[in-house]
Amino acid sequence: MAGKIKINTERCKGCGLCITVCPKNGIVLSKHPNKHGYFPAQANNHDCNGCAACATICPDVVIEVSREVNIVEVKEIKKQNCGIKTKINY
Image (cartoon, rainbow, N blue to C red; front, side, top):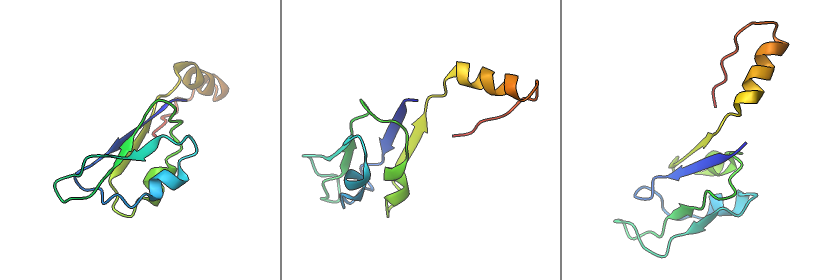
């Protein structure tokens, strides 16, 4: 399942906690400061698996993580539930 990280760079203080917990090394500090003078985290969504460890550890709550849902996976879940429709929220 592929993930995507979105960081509000204007609110990020560049603490680096998200960088330390990312298992795919998909976050770096920007080389350009934001309007407050901080060097914010910057996402490289190339290898993101959507684990959301970065969003969980972020003290400023500036990271959003989304995941692509595999449509085959959803159909399998519906089949296993004998036709009961299941809503999956990520």
